[in-house]
Image 1 (spheres, rainbow, N blue to C red):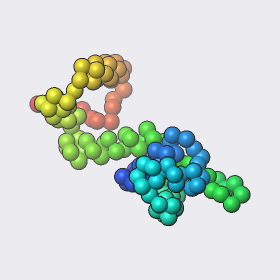
Image 2: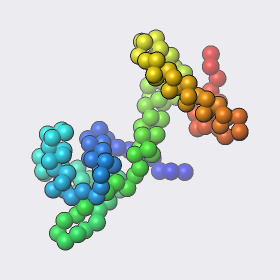
Image 3: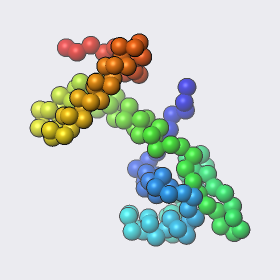
Length: 140
């Protein structure tokens, strides 16, 4: 079982910079984060230190500079965050979430087509005996 990955809202900014391209030195991160969120060099340094301690990012030393890289995959963090959101807001029910989006007319024709394609893939996997992590929740 994978460990639970927790990334705060602030940490997402640094993770996105490193997922886009890494490794990056603090000197390279500072202007990116100043532009995106207005952080000072000391804020960036504090965040990078904390994230290193949390094992979200690692670094390689090259002379006096440390070059930081992500130690977690974006896909793994997104899956964890999505599960947490779904559980917290919709009691784990994908159906409740989709129903809320449909009631608000928040789905475009492109969204609906994309969902159909996703469901077709899920249905074919279910037919082969591969069960997803959502369990067998029944619709009401």
